[in-house]
Length: 485
Ligand SMILES: *Cc1c(COP(=O)(O)O)cnc(C)c1O
Image (tube, rainbow, N blue to C red; front, side):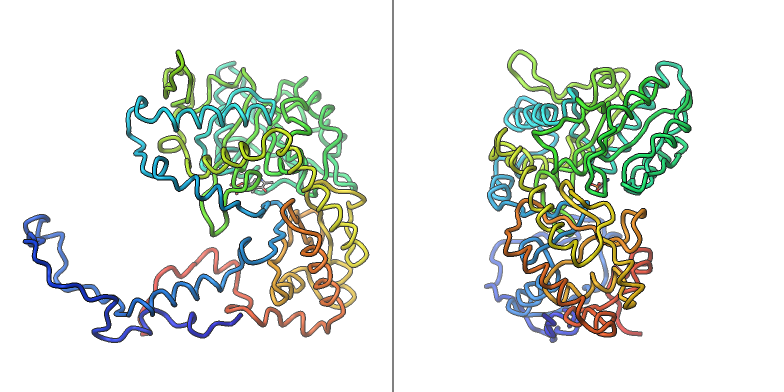
């Protein structure tokens, strides 16, 4: 896997005078740049760009592209992220000229097809969620959380209620409390019981007239369906609070259970997870939200509506929180979600979830004899194994194991999340992986567990970079090449 050519920078490969192509002299008169742009905006000397042949450039970028793992090249069991295969058909359809050549400022009349697609997609999202009012505008899941909480805050203000607390279980994704804080709420953590479910006693002691919203991920980040969800919703509703459903795990329940039916007032989807949009390094996400009728007046504008058989962008909602993103959101991801839903249809979408759950339970059953799964008799679409015993016995941590898996050609699972499981390894095969791939993954884990601790601790050996300082890489990324001083 180590690829020497790709380790050199284009600047290092550069040779003076080398060119990608040779064009005949231009016989069309050209204005000098000075006629077109003010002199103050022009640079005095040409930029020092690398000088390379076309072959150098193509090889450089092609080789670079092989240094990463992706769903197109490797099994990618990243829990919570739903790294399923991205159907190429969706890419083709989203790349049709009639879609990519649209300008977002075109008049509604000239983009009826796109507006119809968005309108129908709103309907599909409403149907799958059981929540009737939809906004496609938010840019990703976390942005959906923020937008829905802003709508909830506007609703509460409208009712002259000064509820200030948002409650989140201790297994919640970090974006949940972060979004609540950004909207100006206080956050309160609700304990989970040993079996991973919400501790109802703790919840009861913290729900009161100050409760604005209870945010819950169901199925949870432990891959468990919260069976008390109706009781939780009744408790929160009877105190005048609202239920937010983090829909990142909808891949487990589509066509089987609807958040609107089990008590949610609002939710977001992650189309880049559930509806197969390429994500991570592969592209942007989207964070459409669905809400109950009583929250509809507060949704972002403009809204896509149908009037007398025509589709329009309507902004006449005086109580709306306004715009949260430019234009209609990340259209490219939404088009892929539309294609995905249309391709599968109602029964196919349900099968997606059934197979995601079946695959996860197969893998759970095979991993459990190797690594303890604290909450794992059965799971939904993912499960969380623990390397705590392995660490104690052999000194091999969840991180070591995850790093060593890279050498076997498997992307690492999510590690150290949720925080409630020590040395957590969160594994989600998704419905798109075969039994053979999952078996190969189990064999790799088995092999690694039989290895010397020192070998595992030194992993990965096959990647370009072995163990970066992850905090520094995230906080102080080096985004620019600099000539060595
Ligand atoms: C991915 C995820 C989010 C955030 O979604 P983004 O689209 O990454 O912003 C929130 N909650 C859970 C449980 C998630 O897995």
